[in-house]
Amino acid sequence: MSGVDDEFPQPDGLHYLNHAAIAPWPRRTAWAVTAFAERNLCTGARDYPEWLLVEQRLRERLQRLLNAPSCADIALVKNTSEALSFVAFGLDWRPGDQVLISDEEFPSNRVVWEALNSRGVEVLQVSLKGVDPEGSLLAACGPRTRLIAISAVQYASGLRLDVQRLGHGCRARGVLLCVDAIQQLGALPFDVQGCDCAFAMADGHKWMLGPEGLGVFYCRSDLREGLALHEYGWHMLENPGDYNRSDWRPAPSARRFECGSPNMLGTMALDASLSLLEEVGMHRVGQALEDRVQALLDGLPGIPGMRLHSALNPLRRAGIVTFSLDGQDTARLFEYLKGHQVVCAKRGAGIRLSPHFYTTPRVIEGTLTLLHAFAKS
Ligand SMILES: Cc1ncc(COP(=O)(O)O)c(C=O)c1O
Image 1 (cartoon, rainbow, N blue to C red):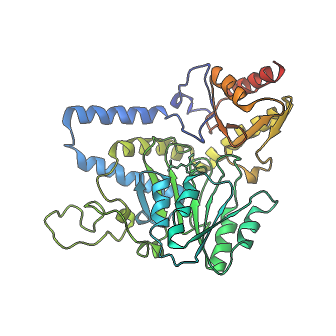
Image 2: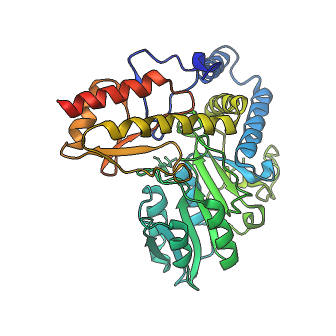
């Protein structure tokens, strides 16, 4: 994509198709981290008030990316799992309450709910295999269902759900919708108001092109105070700088979920990464990613033994294409690809390829050529 090639100076032979795992940083992110290191080296935290402005800018970028009503709805968290835990251990469960998840969730969005078993909460797994996965989830809601926790895009198959339909269905049933958005945010537009979800969370190191260790937690404002807190410290307070004060209250904003000192290094990096996505625009990012995924889907069927595990319908996918080759050992194929500098993942029963909006035709064509050569060998 013109204008951004310079941001991703990956070596010629490298085929980076692993954004659904951990993305490379853009050049500007590497620069932001280097500049931050230099400032720490030379003047320490002397200019901390300036850093707080970057943190505020990051919150605003995340608010726009999620289309959250306000910055006050955004908490900066360690990762998706932490945010999921805030929800799971913050809600006032009653014995017999039910949580619905799918049978394809990444462990983060399964174990956190199963960990509520001791409180009498039941977790039901719903299959997404049918033609109408949203219909299956909504049909599984019963009088005891309190919450549906679902990935917007499944990590292995890449199946994308219609979260808007789910959100409206949940609201009609009085059920909370919690969306693990890590496989969509930064890949395709995502809208917490459009999908009417109660909670959404994502880490920055995949499609948002940031580092590990800094993620976002959106909590709908009317639910914020009802979520019991389990981490306490100075930073989450209404008056965080007033160290001499003996009375305290959690901040009314989502900062209440940020107990202590922020991840300022991660903030510098993620702010820079998101500035790139904003410059390109999420609509263009999504369109360019769709083109790359389509190029893979056009080329893969020509490879002998090809079995696609991902949907062909563009509305049912985001940035993930997973496949296996009949008669070929997936572990051996994975090693072969690794040996030829194709960075991808072994997920589910196949190989997962995940380009991003900037992925060049050379990377896609080179990978397809390597796959042809493997299938013939
Ligand atoms: C759907 C999904 N949720 C969560 C995670 C990871 O969560 P965390 O940010 O806690 O590492 C992944 C990582 O692959 C994922 O694919």
